Amino acid sequence: MDYFLQTIGSINDESRLKILNFIRANGEVSVCDIENTFDMIQSRTSRHLKILKEGGFLKVDRRGRWAYYSIRSPLDAFRQSILDEISYLNLKLPPPSKCKTTSSKRNNL
Image (cartoon, rainbow, N blue to C red; front, side, top):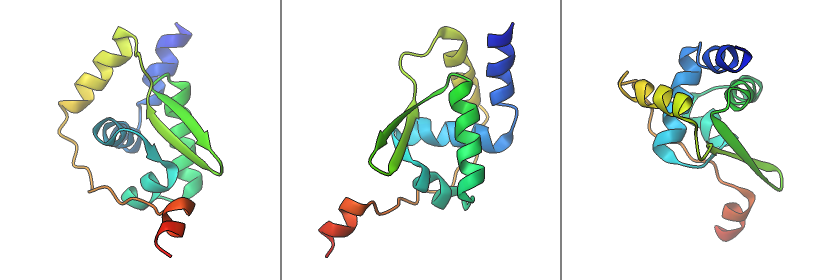
């Protein structure tokens, strides 16, 4: 029962649905990419990502000071069916707005 409630609770917000759909469409993205794309402050972005991770949808890969999120793989059938249903909602997503990581900035110097 807790598994079900935590999963359903994690998608009980339009912003989280959009973030999930964005990550699904763009693969691995940084917190900064999500902040820029959705014009969302860091604390709110991190909270949404934490809830989605606890809901079993996301995995995080920390590299230095950057955190990158992607859809957890493999997903169980229940969560996969939820992702499939979200894709049918035709949520309008803004175009990706990528951040410049430290290594990208060094390459541009």
